[in-house]
Image 1 (cartoon, rainbow, N blue to C red):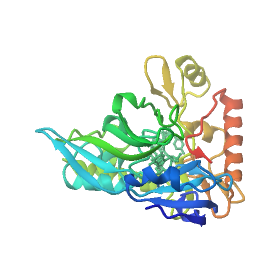
Image 2: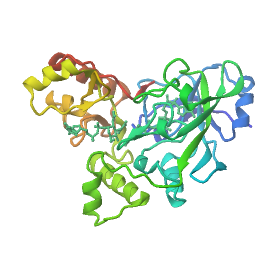
Image 3: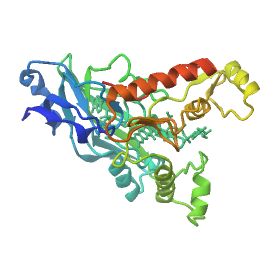
Length: 338
Ligand code: FAD
Ligand code: EPU
């Protein structure tokens, strides 16, 4: 049963806090309702699927039928001596799912604690943090194929996962509604504490033999100290991706900036933190009206109150231009622009 509301305010449904209205708005509570979408469609048939609204920037009033995915449910579908397979509704809140796994000692997902958003959005940009990406844990992605009007799925190897990328952002863009994601998680911990300052944080917490909950707590502490809480200041996390450049380009930058950070990304490429590039261009802490660059993490653009989506977008364009001018590197936006 699909109920359609008109002129529905989305202010609280996007973490940038943009004040926009959906011309038509519905909540999808069960995957079976996908089958009636085509016949129930109002004037516009094009759909905008909304999860937690934590990776999108509205630069205009949407003209699509906005469907908020609230398909819930966590089901243990299989287990063997070493692993469990879980099918999870796309509308489950990501962090709650992480906590669910930790409480049952399902391992591998703990470094991804506190990422905002829904389970269904996780495969779209292959969410990642602290040395783990969901491509390492996803078994299968189930979706409604809008064009064909049928349910379908893709196995992990067909999702073309990359750094903040997948087939869902590329050739399938706009053509699907993810309804559930199947996860394969280990019953035995294999802690990954090498990234960033997880080890230091565990020491600070006085933990010598950490378990998966300790690692999640350390990640939560680091994230809370660094990233702005969208409930306090509007933002969508990293606005740009970290660029992967040819090793020679990185070497040329190093020649002028000995301290320039970089991480190997395959044999020929180096990943340079965009936060560093943006800081070098003096944007850190910049504010114009209510649009700004976060003072602790310049990769995060913020809405201090009443910035419009176009003001944030314009700021992102200015940043791209200045980084390009200084370093010859073109930053790519991570956030989905509507
Ligand atoms: P939304 O913003 O609602 O949607 C994102 C895109 O996916 C849109 O194009 C939307 O149309 C589409 N979409 C969403 N759900 C579905 C569905 N079921 N079917 C089809 N299309 C769908 N990301 C990281 O990878 N790592 C981080 O560490 C991280 N940290 C963050 C920290 C903060 C403070 C914030 C605000 C964001 C952060 N993000 C991070 C970004 C964001 O949390 C993720 O991209 C998350 O997966 C978005 O989920 P969502 O449900 O909010 O998606
Ligand atoms: N840095 C600076 N100045 C700063 C902050 C950072 O120069 O003010 C440099 C430092 O060299 C630092 C490096 O940037 O070592 C990396 O910073 P950080 O560890 O905060 O990570 P990030 O590269 O900025 C990425 C992801 C985050 C993810 C963290 C942790 C992208 C685009 N962003 O950020 O994901 O949480 O690593 O793994 O890959 C998101 O995608 O929305 C997101 C928040």
